[in-house]
Length: 399
Image (tube, rainbow, N blue to C red; front, side):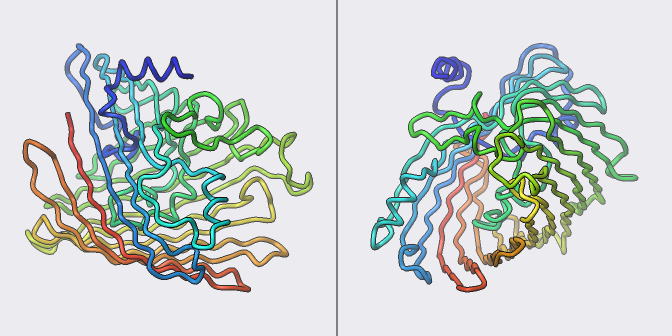
């Protein structure tokens, strides 16, 4: 594994390492890029966030602390010729570990403030893609097209709960077929991918080690064959004058390794999920634009246990004012339902304001965002409330 990382360092310069990207996921874009050249082209986009989270009030005293974190992301593409491309996505971010969680829990004050702790570099995607006209294929490590609310770019915290159903770091195969015209009848992207979890191939990290899943954890999707899959439909309409409408539907099936699972045999079942959502951008005039998102997810047999279901609802509204200013209102809900158990409900609310500096020779975009977050977790027998102020600085540059 170390040799593999050394090879990657030769291909992708160290100062460029980071994850997800402004491309916001490989899938929807594969069939939309057209090149008329046959020589290799190397392109990158780096996005770097510094986030200061001041959790000033919490029901649990140990949850009151300042957290300063960095997340650096890189999307790289080597366009080999007109049809083939090698795609890589990397991240530098905090690697959560059981040791750190245990230390904070054992300490009377939760372990104090955190400043850039336990950061590590990890491979999020590494794949080969083929695109020709309205068809695209991909093989390797990728993020299946399930859900959209987990993507960054809408405030500071609005995607926190949605990250629970993000299906990242999968190894497998997939394809997309595109039809229609988004300015006439709408463009329709039909996608399908089959995969397994990347548990022991490209799941290591550099600098600080992250906790990896083991075979005996029997996480849904952790079968060595490509038994898990996602089927998706993305529809896009362009009404011109910066007015756009899109819909996203997807079905998820994560196969469970029944022989390794610790779930009672009579309750073991594949984890299944359905997502339906949409985005709408509407310009009031040249200086005011609203961008709204709604997304609903229904997840069955969580962790392969037929007794556990979860439902998610995400809503956010971003107002773009005089192109440079923005305001974000967001609400997210997670409902955990477990037979013969209490389960829990989580509600996240955010209000934030930001300013985007104009492009210059040093950056394509520099965003400064400040906001307030309230997170309520109702365990039925107890209630935990956390209140935070936050500041986000985001740097974006293509090269």
